Image (cartoon, rainbow, N blue to C red; front, side, top):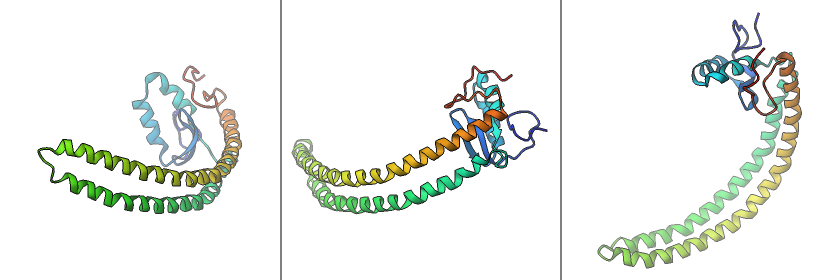
Amino acid sequence: MNTMFPGRPNYTGPTTGWFGLLHHEILYEESHDVMERIQYVKYNKPSYEIAIRLHNMIYLDPVLCPAIAKRKPLDADYNAKCDPLDADYNAKCESLDADYNAKCDPLDADYNAKCDPLDADYNAKCESLYADYKAKRESLYADYKAKRKPLDADYNAKCDPLDADYNAKRESLDAEITAYIKSAIPDCAWNGKTLVYSMVPS
């Protein structure tokens, strides 16, 4: 009975949940209907890839591969830590954007008002107006960018340790899942980054 390998014949296992190697550069991912992916591979991928792709697909049963159950809480913890940083960063950016736009609006209105009545000599007069407009916009934009820079730097500095911690935990988790997949698929074509299509299933 085939309850582990959805890409192989007579599969009777789950069609939703976590699966390994559904895509050639993704070790594992969640799927709401793995059979849709199988059909896509069969009818849309190059012929030389199909057998390798189907052979290496595997259902990751949390009982047999306990590491897979750690992924959702890991993501939830990471997102919970990032959410307040994102909210704070976005709130500060919104205020800065609003101030920037408020300063630009009358400048735009004045520019447009001066351009509207110009017809015959429109281009000649607009060149001078646009140079003035551009210089004022550039000054505003430079001020805006200068104010955004410390916000971005603070946000990234706070995110970096979260990302590093998350990636370190993901690396350990991915190693466990890779070991499980390779124990279930001895001739697995995964090389650590992608499926290798020259590795013909035995």
